[in-house]
Image (cartoon, rainbow, N blue to C red; front, side, top):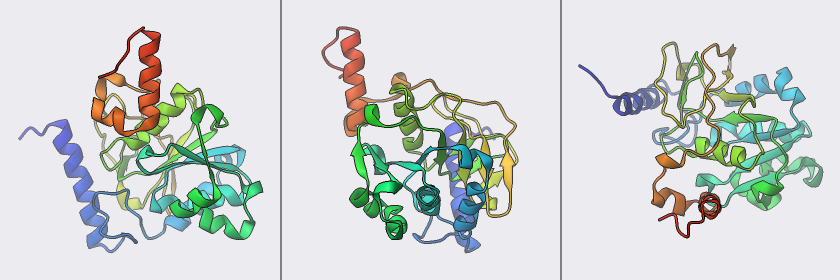
Length: 252
């Protein structure tokens, strides 16, 4: 039976979510379905990432706001690096957290979503420093670097926005931290907007991905509908600026 790309991707996500729940690998919040799944060993994977040279060299790190990367965000701050965290669904843009302006005993709190809002500063992408390293959450990732998030495309949009504003290059290192069961040894078909990761970090190993590197050069507007653009203020702002460049008055 021939299975189309979308159905295959959805089935692969479901299989991983089911497996993590059945094996009791998933951590709070549960069940893992419909989210970037938290997992037992996420703190070990975070420590493994923090021991890598590419982490040590980075001065500005962008990390997704999901639960399994909370410890990564804390280690970014404890390492004296600037942390950029997108707000959930990019609804309020990006938060910038400077460890020099946060008491060290609050780094753990600052690494949570609520704490980041309280202790960080909402910052327009034009005012963000250039990012040295991106840490992305994943539902599943292949040994070749192809990843799937939960299916809503926010990681790809966050990356695209940073590229559009000149705050991330298409050569920037991208890593993901996942449980070992989230790693597959076969190719995952990518959509045009998908990016690949350079390294996979699990609680037990560090994998350098050897597949073809894929990085969109910004937002792929032809693949976005007006509802998506309108729901994310930064996208709407970029769309309106783009239309002004073409002497148009509305993106609708």
